[in-house]
Amino acid sequence: MMHVELTQIIDCSGIGSGECTERALTALGNSPEFNLRARSEDATVHGSITIVHDSPPEPHLISVEIYEANVSAEPEDGGRKSTLARPTIFPTERQINDRLTKWVN
Amino acid sequence: MSIVVTPIPRLIDLAAPAFQLGTANAAGSAATAVASDSTLLAFDAVAVDAITLGQSGSVGTAVVAPRRDHAHAMESLPAPVFGRVVRTAGDITTTSTTLTDVTGATVTLTTGAFPVMYICTAFGNNSTTSFNVSLNVDLDGGLQLGSDGQTYVAAVGGSHFNMSFSSQTAALSAAEHVLKMRWSVSANTGTIKGDSYGAFVWSAFEIR
Figure 1 (spheres, rainbow over the protein chains, first blue to last red):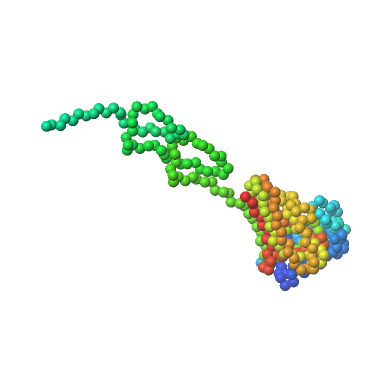
Figure 2: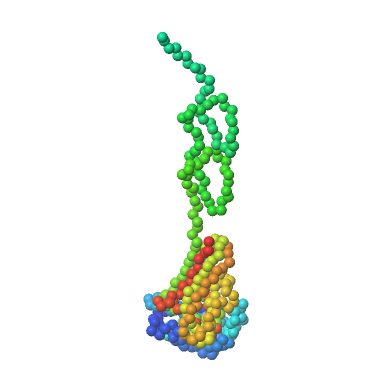
């Protein structure tokens, strides 16, 4: 699994953490071909995004995980129904950083 | 008429007392007596024993007694260890459908051979109606709440619900232990509130 983590000072108090996450997903190019969020329980996802929405002066901590290979269900996954798959077009760490940096700026 | 004083010979010598404190009366054998203002050895200057936790009782062998106002040194009880993480600086969101750490929600305790109580105080939501947020506790790499964990279903997407829970481990080994909060969603975006309106608190303490 590729794990990209970056910190950015963002004030999302005006839009809320939910909308902040939506914008980050849009910036990352979230789509069926590069899906970081399941829309249904049996969706195929290629990774995920986790954000700690700290307020300035503390930065947001943004963690993006992308599956480098198809992932079988693990015992700890419990009732997970989603399919975890490697995206057809695998982004580089730099591309992920660039997309998120543009979103912030 | 003069008075003649004739000293009566002293038949018994007076000696220093040599009484022993014991568990039965004994006649003794010395051919001496003690004066009525003599002093008996009943005490000495040795401090009574320091009491430790779990020590065994003992009849003892000393031939002197402690003083009525003696005091024992007493071992202090080790303070139970505890730890907590409080988040008020902002929410945490995730889209992960597999368990991922709740960022920062890790408590490390060096315990005795005792259980640990842990408490999660949290409000949160799933962005979409009928989808889940699941919370679980990882103790030293093993899940405490089954594979599904505590699962909360959003009756209304985006509306906060109570995700607080508490539980207890089995008795742990006397060693360092790490308790982490982990979470996932069934789909869509999960949120754990962590602001001035609703703090997220992850805490654990040893039960002694």
